[in-house]
Image 1 (tube, rainbow, N blue to C red):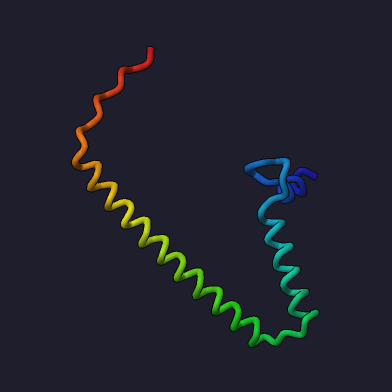
Image 2 (image 1 turned 120 degrees about the vertical axis):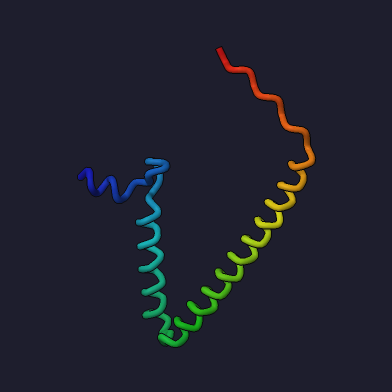
Length: 90
């Protein structure tokens, strides 16, 4: 029973269902949709290719934005005077 609870419950919040179970549910729903809707394997592959392309481009965009943000932050912080050290808490 402990193993089943470990699989079903979220590690971050035990009151929620784990991401693993949600993902398995998503896979089952998509497989049933493909079988039930009569989609061909080529349709599914085309969708997967398009999704992979969108995700890759999105990751590249996020990386570029974070790079520019980090560079801008580095420049701004380079011209600020350094903060004085904090006094130790007693």
